[in-house]
Length: 419
Length: 150
Image (cartoon, chains in turn orange, red):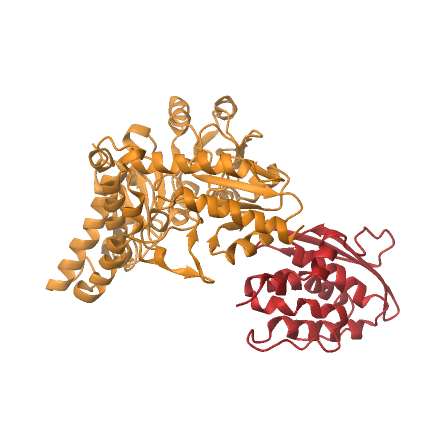
């Protein structure tokens, strides 16, 4: 079983020591405009615990060398550390083997890798790619590019007023022409948790492979890709308390063997002549050029650290923040929460009557509160609700009820400025 | 420390609440769309150009208080002006917004537009204040005889 299950022995919210977790994040003790930092922009990127920062620094200070090619001591050390990172990420996701983990720059590149491969080998005019109305631009645009190249069609499952993707609407759009379904596990804009396991079962019953955009799920829910049954799962290190510029694509060995390389270059080959090049084995077939070595190491440490805290405990803690936040924010006059799915992660998107989200963001910022305002790289979601933008508070494992209250109090100041 | 009141001055809040010249113009001679991809704000600017003079100018759209008030005050300020005068005003306004934050802004010659002097201390919001003016640039550039400021 995955390290996730091992590392979360029956943790309950009550046993969860948020202050101890907070103490591991150096940045959380800083102030902004003279106020203690209240960081509620975790769906955007998360802060980094000391162990991750130390791991990255230690690599540069003690083990820096290129990987997979040196005969010298440092190169061996660096290779060990980087491949160790891959093993940790594999364990985190519950993958059967590190071979199924391709390091990428992030979720976006992971999805592009699959979309480009599909466009080259598997898509023809008239084929369909199925996505949902909840997707982030990174799970829309790569498929549009693939469709442009091949004449395939993008089919979108509509979402409800609550921000949910109905299972029957999804099923209805699985046709003999569907070549792949790409769905987000958790919506970044609204927080909706999609029933991806059901989607995958329905798709597989029709032999349709499924890619899951897990960027917003991996830091917040216990995960096991084998249990989910997905063919691909894409994640970003920086949303999981790890470094930026590193992410991973999980793919079943069968699929990764079938997909063509994404980029050509060093490290992804076994042998090169001007006549013919043989590609490297998995997962290096997909990793051209010198990798983000420090990123891979830091990502692994972050994944282990997160498993150590325990995803079940994290999910329970963040659910408590979601309930508390939803309750408190609902009482703010003129405030409407956008996205009221039954299953939600710790994301609250909202609008305030007669105040533009951008103005909310600026006023909260002066109170030391960081939230995101705008379309959250999910313009179709905004269009669905007829909004140009929303304000979004998104919780991480270090947030507290007191911070949620600080947000609510600051919104009263917004009201005061705007009368 | 910068006070929020430097940014959200009464005049700005008033214009946000009841923007001037906020309507579609059916007999406009020129129209341009402004878009801020960062926040999704959209603006439509209508103008009636007679000779080299801006006889009338109106706008519509969704935006934050800064962008709405900026469009409102801009339309007041450039109505009746020549194209060259509007350009010159844009140059001055731009300087007002992008000058060094530690230097007190000099709003000379800007009239009511000087209320945006606080924006330079909020770099993330400069684009909100210039959206209407960038859209105006598109309207002005519709002809070949308009000088470029940059």
